Length: 409
Image (cartoon, rainbow, N blue to C red; front, side):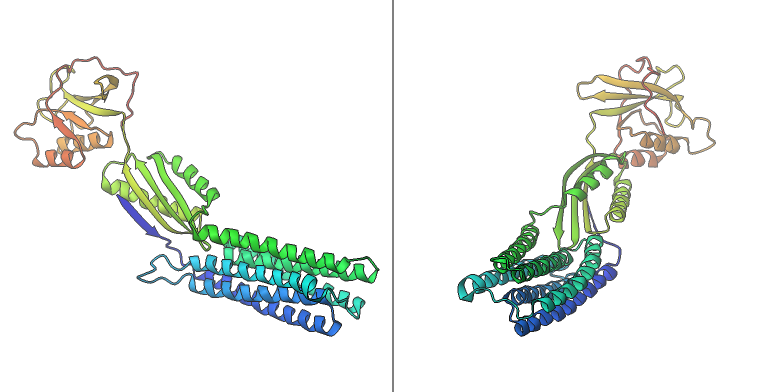
């Protein structure tokens, strides 16, 4: 059986926060990029202009990621799970744009005309220092938000901000080195900036492409889910556990072997497990749990006997006791024990109450000869619970073994 379960919590707050961070990033980055572009043109500094191009490429990437985050929660008949992969697609496109920007920086310096030094190096250093203070403050706060929201889109933007900070430091070192007369200081600075750009682009492209190809699994979350499920007593085995990522959302699928009595109990158990997993991992957008009956290495037989523990009981409800036997596939008795019938002296409902006791104790076969006068609902109840009714065992006098207590409920 299969129980699909969509994330019951409203993700609107998280999505709204992502959008606000992206809008803030776009606005601030555009403002700083224009400031660096203007200062680079004013001072004539190639290094500052290269950093401005880097920042403008980040603005374009942030616009793409914002558009994806805005559309990701949208669900429709054609896209019932939403458009979370758009966030990964936007990250990939942004990574390609950043790669192109790095190439353009290197080409302009080493092919088109070399590096031009600023006409006012001290003022340029002060300007870049002010830019760095603003960038670091925003980077620190957005990084914490990206970790809390587990958003690849925000994470790619954080990487871009870190690249901007590193590039700004390199710009200052290059300009300062040139001012102090260090040969090729600015050329080295440009190469380092390009290296930072390429590294950040590689990480964004790698994560985005792996997610789009469903090769990016959330291994830490998979281990967390597996450990939780294996601690549940009714879960006998966990098979085919997979968690795939789409944007910042996770999608879980697993097959469980359950030791549950009947469809209703198994269904209720799976619903509870799905709810618990969503509480532990809020990023789980969708949970699909397949469940199957647990494979048992034995069948549990119940002999309804009289007080001498040998003679089959004269009536179902008036049995003096029940001998439970666990029998493997080769007919060997693995364990057996005797229980007095707790309902023998009940004023009414003896048979049905004893049948319910057998069901609770996971009996597979009851050995009893139905007689006239037994409640008509008795056979229906046992059959519905999956308990077979067979003739009394050939050797009901097998000695009970109290040392192997089967533990009735």
